[in-house]
Amino acid sequence: MIATTCVRRSVALACLPVLLALVLAHVLLRDRTWVHEWVWALYQYGFVTVLLGPLVAGVAAWEGARLARSRSLLGTADRSLAAVVLAWLGVSAWTLLAYAVGLVLVVALVVLAGTPGVPPPIAVFACLPPVLLLAAEAAGGVAAGWWGRHVLLAPVVAIGCFLLTLWLYVTGPSALVVVGGATGSMAALEPRAALVAWQCAWFAAVTLVCLLAAATVTGHRLRPGRPLLVLATVGAITVARPLLAQGEDTLVPTGTRTEVCVGTSPTVCTLPGYSSRAAQARQVLLPYLAALQRSGVAVPTTFRQDAEPGEQTVGVIGTDLLLGHHADAEFAVLGAFLRKSCSNRTDTLDAFSQLAAWLSSTVDHQHPADPTLPAIVLGPDTPAQRAWVRESVQTLRDCGR
Image 1 (cartoon, rainbow, N blue to C red):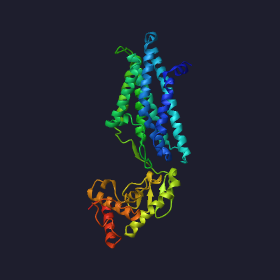
Image 2 (spheres, one colour):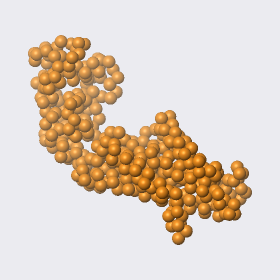
Image 3 (cartoon, rainbow, N blue to C red):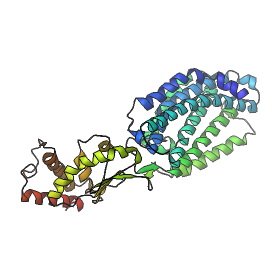
Image 4 (tube, helix red, strand yellow):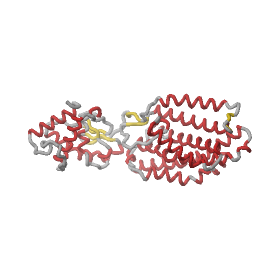
């Protein structure tokens, strides 16, 4: 009953429209290519914490400052802890509601896009760190307001939280704040389960430390007999070590996923969410493959979303190509011959760009205005040109000469 009353009276309720507006803007006003992939959709939504977290911290600081005015009436530290926890609960409850509305919207958009199946367990698990991060930011805000005792501290806390988040994103350790956000397809990637688990433990520990510290530290003095704060602090430090040891890689190659394949020579395999577009993408690739075959080049027999560049018999088919952006289709074909480890070599890059220009000229009848291109690239189909094509492809395969 008391908890319900505190939630209803929380200042976060008045800020709920703003919280919802930020969530909806994050989902609806940005590119929504992710609607074709469950893992990508749920993971990228976690990036909303960059916008939502600072506002939540500021609102929580306001709530903590309001509570601090009654500090003298609370008496013992035990009552202070209960009051601080209830203030935090009120802010967290309305924050969780705003976050849940956005998450439901994301799921609805994925379903409406026709993406079959249900989210895999790792995608659902990856939804927990953003929630716990927001709870930790709310706890930090309540503690700051409780200590500062002035509502004008709220914007300072919000700005400070935002700047700290950006700083950790840029300089690291990013594991302390990166809980989502992927700018490209996650067909071959998924969140690291170990990192997600340690992040959950870390954010929970930080929340506990902030709430206990707010209730036990008054006038910059630690009240005696508060071993819970010491234990919580030790626990947070203990959890931080394995979390930081996880490194900066938030994603790992995924295991086998369900694929839908169409056609032969080449076969195009995609995630189920892109299956309706696979046949069209295959048709786009065929003229480029035919041009290479006429020159005597053995072309890829399969294209997959989760393939690695340079596999030669298996090409990578990207999200853009599947979604109808065909301007650079020749790169999908050539990418099968060029490994990532070779992409910084001058001779392989030259061969790649010249072959791309040749394919563009041969298939699309577009002649790049590049005076540095050898004359044979844009010349007529002759045995000499075909030999040059085979030699250039071999350069890509051999990672240079």
